[in-house]
Image (cartoon, rainbow, N blue to C red; front, side, top):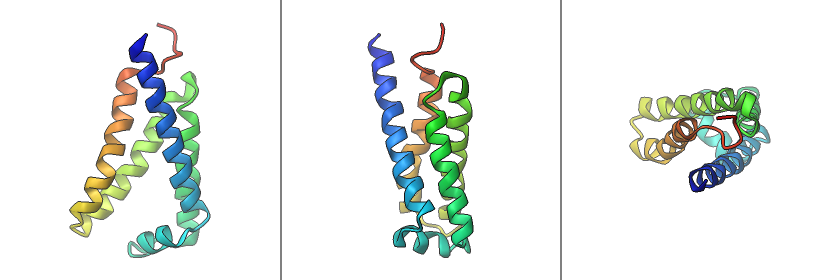
Length: 116
């Protein structure tokens, strides 16, 4: 039971971060625009990434779409990690890596409301 509560807390943290970061990308916050423009991702691309980031975060809430939501979230983070590696920006990778691992941990622990 305690493990389910911990996983539920991790899911809500991932939801919060996904919505927060996704909204920042979708609305074109200056720090997001600056970061993604160095990778030649324009406003439309940034909006699409923001949309999928928020979609993935929301899908994680429901047992039937849980794995897909985590897949979308992890894929988006992996793309950002790849861009940071391309730039040899290990600090950027270090910032993104815990969020990537969080998606994997949440999948491993499974959805707390899923039927056993």
